Image 1 (cartoon, helix red, strand yellow):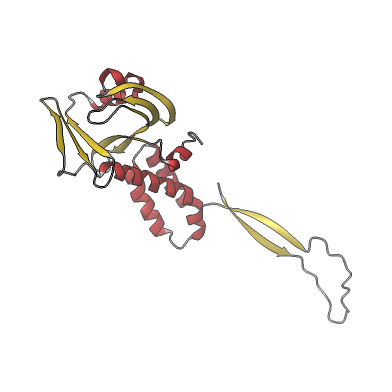
Image 2 (cartoon, rainbow, N blue to C red; image 1 turned 90 degrees about the horizontal axis):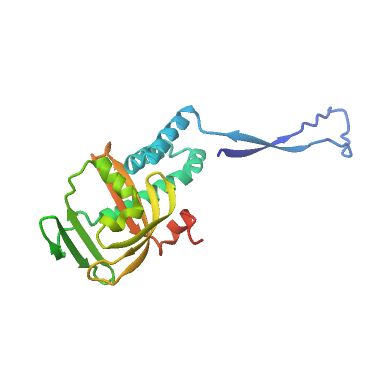
Length: 232
């Protein structure tokens, strides 16, 4: 995609001083529109290629950090702002989605213990002024990361090992690290649920040394459903 500018070129009509102008003269193409393609310069293109690499590699926080720097560097370049608007908005949407889920990681108060043994601890809490219940499961899995990621990737096998999952199937795979699933879940405390779930990975190894594997239901999230072309 490139930015298009339209310039107006006026044909020149030269009239000698001693001559009386003939206003009936036909001047072909007196006004002509010329379309000029204007693209980012080589440095900007290289920066945007690096940004796209970070997004494809699921380095969302590094991509967001780079996007903020680019916005600062080219804040006065409206053509550049317009050119990058779509990709920058997608980065903002991804970061907002991740932060919405990870905000519970550091919450320590208000949990009720549902189950606790040597393998795992299951906690939940009712959100204030909301029908929603947040469940948190803490456990340590002593297997190599690549094997664990492979288990996560095989979504049809979830019922064999994923707590409370009765059935799971992939309905869409937008990219290598994102899947949209249909799941039938039977969690504690609340009744059985059928869910449309987005699951995806976040590569923070270069950012803070972590890897996040996130999922949440999206059946009521119109913006996400539209983005992935589901039920539109």
